[in-house]
Image (cartoon, rainbow, N blue to C red):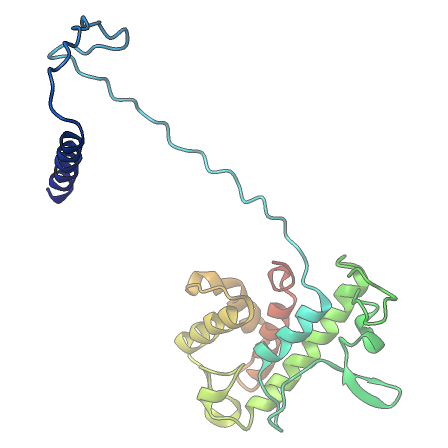
Length: 237
């Protein structure tokens, strides 16, 4: 209500100023303009405008193409997933090169073979092909890192573990079905970012039960760890 009153006051002020400047005189007769019919749409009383039914929009598929992680991205991902080793250092995939233990993703180790770019301009575009050599190195990485994760968890409290977080380890006893499902769902979320239910880990459960025994459940969890590292969704985005 304030806006119409405001403009009315402004109009009154303008009219008052105009009258003060020009003395009043006889008002000229404005010729009357005959009314013209609007040639546009004219709604008669009682007419109803029909409602238009919009069809459901068709959402196009996501045009984003899948891409493989670069070597640098893989190198940064491993410590985030694997955690720390017995010395408290980040777990990494390592190799012995010229008598020295180095990160295996380094350009001077296996990085060049995996398609890594270098800092000196020799290779400027990453090779993101999933070649047999890449798959072989991925398998080597998974097995070594999972061994390190299992070894590191041996001296950690259950809440601090990264592989055996919700299941007994070693002489702590045997895991029940609920604990197995909980640990499998946790690992799938940790490795792949996939929050799922019991049905979503059925394949991992089958893998675990096919390898684990009552006297050696650790082997089953190592197999699950390797399988998650080798899952295609771990390597693509």
